[in-house]
Length: 311
Image 1 (cartoon, rainbow, N blue to C red):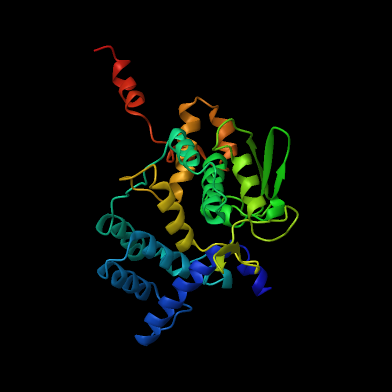
Image 2 (cartoon, rainbow, N blue to C red):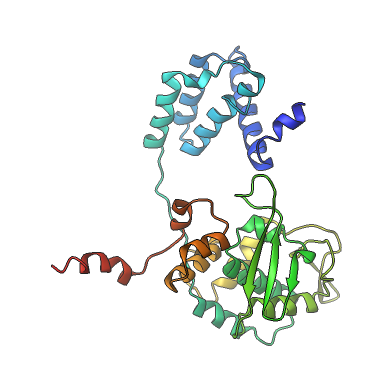
């Protein structure tokens, strides 16, 4: 029963709360208190120590959620929630004000820049280059998050005459693992996702029916580069290093990251006047507020507000 109760939250959330709870447990045990059931004043003092240490609001909130209910330490055991105390609630608000750090969003790339990048490598047979390009155009065209893209298996891709479908078995917004399908149209340039993905799979000798990860680490043997045989996905650190370096070829000076690809694709679709409902579904967003945060409005669009006032 305990294992089922833990699975009421996603694996990522459970791991995050478990780690936060262990830190709380270590803190209160060292002070001679008890972690469960916790005293509200002890929780307030713990949150105070996090704020004094300069921890971000998200860290402070994670600590609170790990301790509270209804789906974690206290609530899962049917115990009284110690985080409803006014001291605790006000400290959470204080953390948001005191330790707030200005969000620095990543820059975006245009589709013209991606086409130029692919044009620069149109004749390459280098597996590492093709792997990077395939990852880039797939994330751009499918609005994929890093975790979604790296979790893709070879047999999740199905090629058709004029489009390909990508089965997404694991997504941040798919808490119940129902899965989703993303369809990507065939393009006309060297940045066509279908074309690049086929080239990558052909050069890397990837079996389309395989259940292995599509994007795997590589190794070199006698000057020849190949994907590793072990079924292991790319790490975030290595993917960020190689993909961002590739993007810098056409985006020098920009503040780029892996999430730039999802934001860039969404921005390009919005500027092309694609119906909001359609590209919201394409990007697997649950709410309008979430998807709107990805869009970078052009200067012309922003000026149109005051231009409409006819002053």
